[in-house]
Image 1 (tube, rainbow, N blue to C red):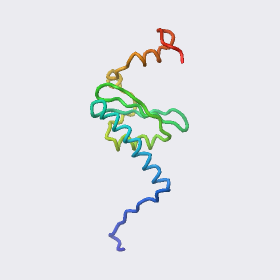
Image 2: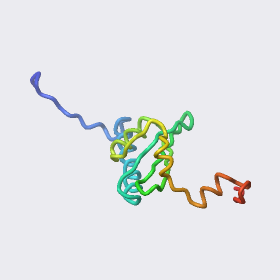
Image 3: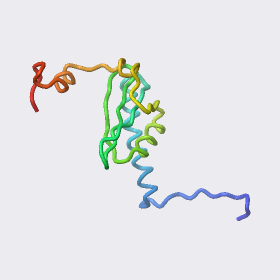
Image 4: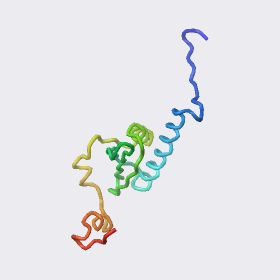
Amino acid sequence: MTDTETTTATPDPGSPDARVERQVRRIAKHIERFTAAHGGGGDAIVEYVGRDATRIVLVGTDGAWGDQVVRDPDIARAAIAKAGVTLHEEFPNDLAAKVRTTKYEWSRMAGLQLGGTQG
């Protein structure tokens, strides 16, 4: 091999890099299915939940929202980029105003104060 030649090594399927890439692809597919079902585009926010948990909050172009919890914030960001969704560093007001909540979310958020069910 000369100094100008480059090679692209395929990671060993059992290597940490290969496992991370499989996780990114799997999560990106979930994001793509969500966005396809809710207007074909969307926005995402990555939130810290705990030492081994990161939450991806998705908002579709139709205002529907969903979330997915993954282990690593870098994997979450890579999956969002792979899915082609706009990543926000914080939850902007205009995006929050776009979110459509249903009776289910209101009953879960308000709990018993507004007649929601416990549990």
